[in-house]
Image (tube, rainbow, N blue to C red; front, side, top):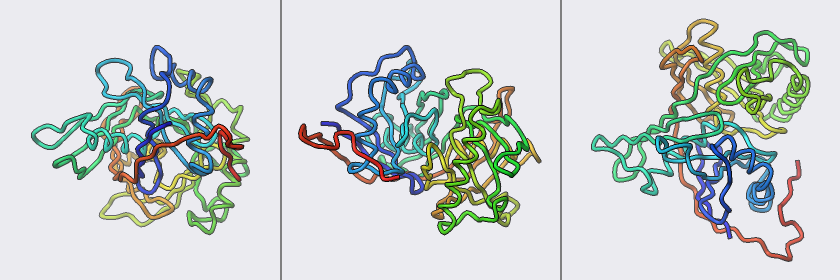
Length: 321
């Protein structure tokens, strides 16, 4: 039996595995990711695929942090494997840690939930009253531009890192907009872009090959500014055609790296394809990249005890797309 606590952040699901999984070996969280990919992929598929999940499911295994400076470690997964970063998941983990009493807020109601993830150490700043979360902020690893104006799939594409590597392109470049009615076409274009960039130098992380690879494609629309703050609508298609319902936390950080590099943009209201929002701010500039903080909301949706019948003909589930 495997136990989980489920959340959604801005509409995007996040399944936190709390029990029933063996210890995942490794000297740090990034090494534990390699172990999980080799030894726990069946468990990932069981929890993520139908009939227990779906093709757009997301979640994590909790693991020990790298050192006592963090409260939790997390290995993020989706229908096709394990990712290196997850902003919406980090926000959900912050809410989870406070809801469950793992991290107690201070007298001012603020708790800094520090989480080690494969891309580095991140923080969820949680403001709460009597364990009721009032606000959530995700503080990301440094984000930076990798490449500009690459000719891919017949359009101009930018590439940036926000904990994972993303290609960014205006939906209008394909004659489309970020709307549910255009989603199938956007998913098809994302697959073309990822395939053409698979062996491109821009898909490589400059310092750690384990963080390499185009994780997602961000399609965005420009929207009117709000009180001088840049506003965009986006949809991030990651893995093999998986669609983020939220504005995508690490993707939002990658967008901020591009916007700040272009014209020193410091604030962004990022709207998702389902109408939810993240608010992002560049808080600092470092030699490694910009430090982006992202405000969002996460909500608990349920607790589960999953079982596997030994006679089940679909022991690790399935997906129809």
